[in-house]
Length: 134
Image 1 (cartoon, one colour):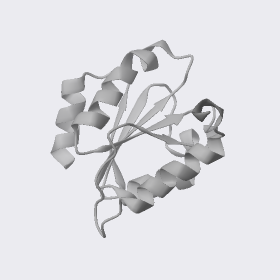
Image 2 (tube, helix red, strand yellow):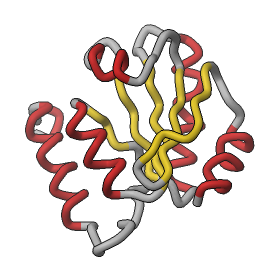
Image 3 (spheres, one colour):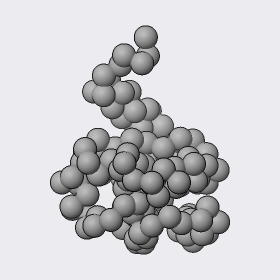
Image 4 (cartoon, helix red, strand yellow):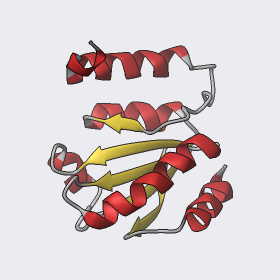
């Protein structure tokens, strides 16, 4: 039955988990990527967590598919929250952050964008970048 859940149901569930994990400061980070569906979702995630790695991707993008396992591992292994933004479904949000090619990774620290990377990146490089802001 879970395969039949609507995007709105999934979104509401994830936002509720974000709210429940709040501890007055930086919340415990989720162990899997947060799927962002709107500017409000991204804003909430950036406000909720100290460091957020945002993966702007497209389903048709080969390099994005290559990067996906790395992004999932970083979500499970680092202190950063990891978010994924489908640029085809969120064109306005992608434009707001200057996405001109995918994959594009954006690191937020304390609510502000601090690093922007385009293309496939190694897990070690991304973990080091996250560590620099954690």
